[in-house]
Image 1 (cartoon, rainbow, N blue to C red):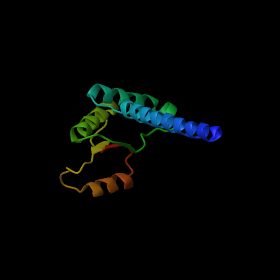
Image 2: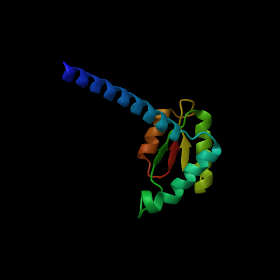
Image 3: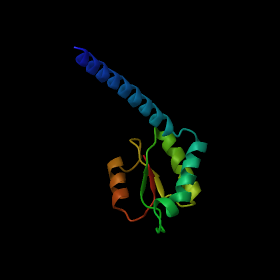
Image 4: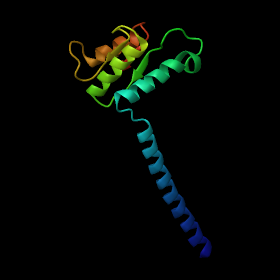
Length: 124
């Protein structure tokens, strides 16, 4: 009986530890990946630009196609503007694709991004 009780207690303890670890990890990941204000966005984009050809893609000379996900339309707008400023490129370099696009459908814009040659960034 004692062995059974100790095994049950051990299993319960592991479940409790797993729940705590899982919750803690989820919270840390959620908090560490939030990039809310323009200053934080600019820091992330600058760091990406600085490390792009040395650490992330050594040997490359062009910026590869990159997707950047935003929490809402305003956040996406901030990201696109900062990307264009930091990389000093034209409007073809970065585009915002949301459900609120005017003109083309989001599906068409994504297909265009996927199939076009022009390397660059896309904020969605």
